[in-house]
Length: 303
Image (cartoon, rainbow, N blue to C red; front, top):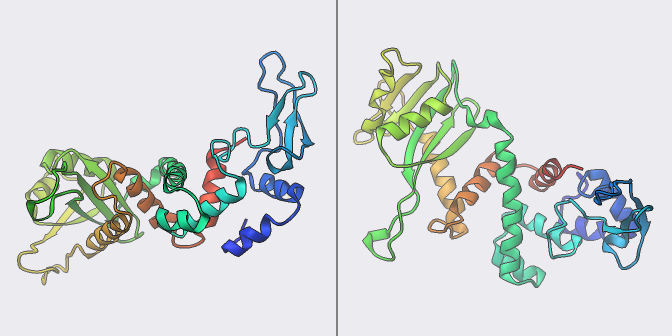
């Protein structure tokens, strides 16, 4: 898997004999190498046979009931309507953040087809984030977590179609450089404090702006589990006395909005899954993105 670093590598990979391609995909864990007959009356182990008309030139055959099954059964590729080779190209373009429209033109596919397959990939991304519970716990003793809220959908200059405002709460651990984004019902004190208590570990030093919803962080239940410091942005970006600032979280917002703006999803119903994509990219996508998405597909579709 690590040997594939470019489109040329993928092209070269699929110019080999189908048996070699299949063996490599099975070794990576993208395609199963064994199958138990799905028939309740059988459940015998199937054998892999060569069949020129089948996908990748092979299929599974049950010796007992003589039924044939696709070599892709139960894999990420099973629900795709494209050849395995084209799906691998799509995965590579997606990992390079190539817009769906450009991918569609490069691969001579319908835009709707590319968008649908991109959603399949983002489904893996969202699943992977849920498998990393430590990602949703930030801070701890000796750590500083910067917190800020933002709205990601609103009308510009109060013109255009009416769209519901979506408030999100961002947190960045300045020690580990890990961040996370949470949807909140509104900008109220109760909604914000509830999220902080759930996702920020006790002993954390929290830096925020002067928004009044954060005022009670130092007085929670009489003895707060946090050390709260704030900066008044009306006067300074960095507090001249304490050095407190929110530059890390502001940079996180900037990257998120740029990411979503390039995909034109700030006012889309698909915004949540694109936010998941952004958080995944921040964690895994800055190095060997293609390798990481292949690994996570293998983790989700285990055999």
